[in-house]
Structures are given as C-alpha cells and as structure tokens.
Amino acid sequence: MALSQIQCLDENNVNLRTNESKPDFFYSEEQRLALEILLRDGSDAFNKFLHANNLRCFLSDQEVDRLTRSVEEVCDPESELSRVVDSDSDELPVSLQYWPELSACSLPRLDLGWPDCASYRGVTRVTVYAQPPLDGYAHIKEMVRKTIAQAQKVIAVVMDQFTDVDIFRDLLEACFKRKVSVYILLERAALPHFLSMAERAAMHPGHLKSLRVGVTGGAEFLSRSCSRVRGRLGHRLLLVDGDKAVSGSYRYPNL
Image 1 (cartoon, helix red, strand yellow):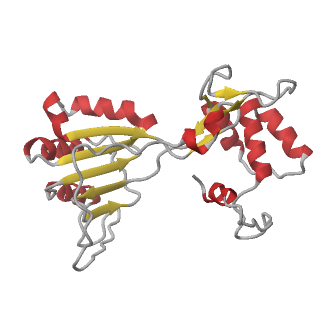
Image 2 (cartoon, helix red, strand yellow):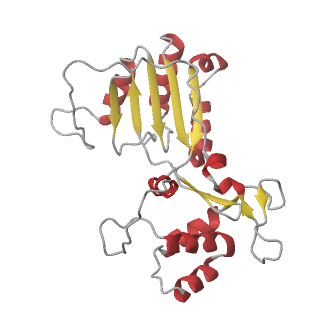
Image 3 (cartoon, rainbow, N blue to C red):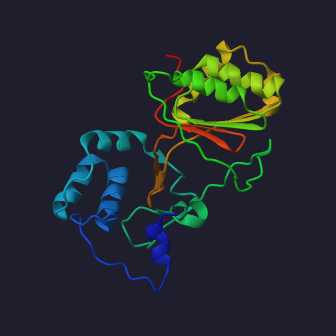
C-alpha cells in the first residue's frame, strides 16, 4: 500500500495542501481521476477531462498509448467482485479489487530455503565495474560468472531480460552439480525469450529439483472500474549466499 493510502487511514493525519511547483508534490487526486477515465473511456475522454478541469497533461503521448494498449479487465463487472454504488446512477460498477485488502499480492514461498539473515560482521567492500571494462578490471560477464561459481548455498537472480546461455548454464551447473538453490525472477513479458534460451541450454527435468523460476511485473494500478495496468520489472540484480550482491544496469542478454 502506498504511503499516501496509509496516511488516509489515519484519522489524525492532516494532509497539507501542495501543488506541482513544490518539491514534495507526488500525488494529485485530479490526476488519479484522469487516469481512471483514461483506462475506462480512452484518450479522447482523458483529454476532455484535463481541459474541463484545467489540468496540464501529465502523461506523454507514448505513455498514454502504452496505458491504453496494456489495460486489462480484472473481473467481469457483473461478477460478485463488483458492485453498483447506486441503482439509479449511470456510473459503471466499482470493483472491490480496488481496495487494498483484496488487491494485495502474497509473497512467493522460498521452498528451497534461504540463508539465515544474521548480522554481517566484517569489512564491507564495494567494487564498481564498467562496460567496456576499465584497465585492470574484468569484463562484467566474467565477474558475474565467477560470482556464480563461488556460490555455496543459494543464488537469486532478478532480471528484466535473461537470454544469456552461458550464465544460465552456470546456474544449472550450480543447482544440479553443487546442489545450490537457485531462484530466478523474470519480467513477465520476457518469459518466452527465456524459455527459448532454456531449450538451447539443453535443460532437463533433473535441474528443476533445485531451481525455481517465477515471473512478475512492475507496480500495478487497479482502477475502480474493474481494470488494471501493469508496469514492467526494471530491477537487475544477483544475490549469492546472502552476503554478496551484484546490481547495476548490466542485463543478461547474450550479446
């Protein structure tokens, strides 16, 4: 739940009025209503609402096009997950999934185990790698593969696009030969490319004993009219044994 929603549940909270010129401006009820209309009625109705309420267009043409093309119907307006506010009203049904208690997603189960989160004692080191590599530094892909080879307990990969066969085969070797638990979390839209790469890597059922692959997207916006838009996963990180992390803009495509 967003901080603004949590604050609205607090009866003692006073929301100070602000505007777009202030640095602390991050939420506008008028913009939220405009987004609801965009998802429900399309771009023409969205532009009319902006003009009627004297709002500047806060979305680019590309964003408007992407939102209208990616909107999903969460449920049938006639189902039990929807209700009509007023039988005499011309408004569309309001989805009960809009409210936090029905729209919250459960966390995935880490059934292969996870290292104990004990406090770390020792020297914390941070190393910066660049591509192309700086003098005396290894290629980022080489560093990633060496980090995977050093894993003893668990490896977790979060990646928006994963098509590098070499890195994937390193993960398969870690989970099959060294019995290292491997979790992979991918952007939903990139899953077909990952599956194609898995076929090229000669994956077999035995690898699945210590390997789990999941998909997700970015943040979601659930509207009051039974519709939803999903963002896209933008994180790129590698966690090893609970005490090593590799994060940055480097992706795992086989380029």
